[in-house]
Image 1 (cartoon, rainbow, N blue to C red):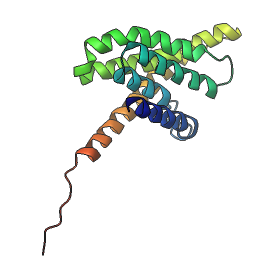
Image 2: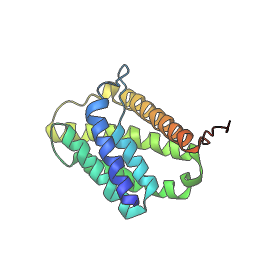
Image 3: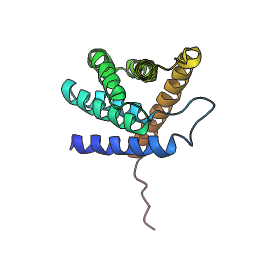
Image 4: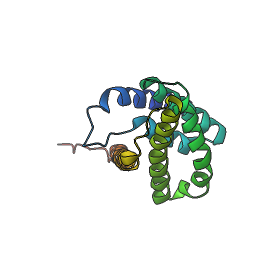
Length: 166
């Protein structure tokens, strides 16, 4: 059942990344729905399973971009491998730790993929605004994630409205 939920999260993230993300751009910041889904997978599953789901989401991100396949997948798995231990040890019970790890992963992913793609294609690296854009995207993505979780939690925990008999 948990894998079905993960599949639905991955599907919704892929559709949102390909259709909604271009419409939700604010300045230079754009939401990274696939990275948000990857952070969710790392939180949902154990080590090997979460790395497999994160790899799939990285591959889906590669499919949305032109260029070499596998760079996003490899980068996502690399980041997930180093984020799993802190997530397991500290963040399970701490919202601050979870958000910090999500911001770190969301910021590291575009920086590393841009660097690797620039090295693979031998193009100039846009280093001047790379970190600023990555931080803006990370803040925007994590804010959308926290807002989504809060909204879902509110909807699921609202008391049922009861109509008093006449």
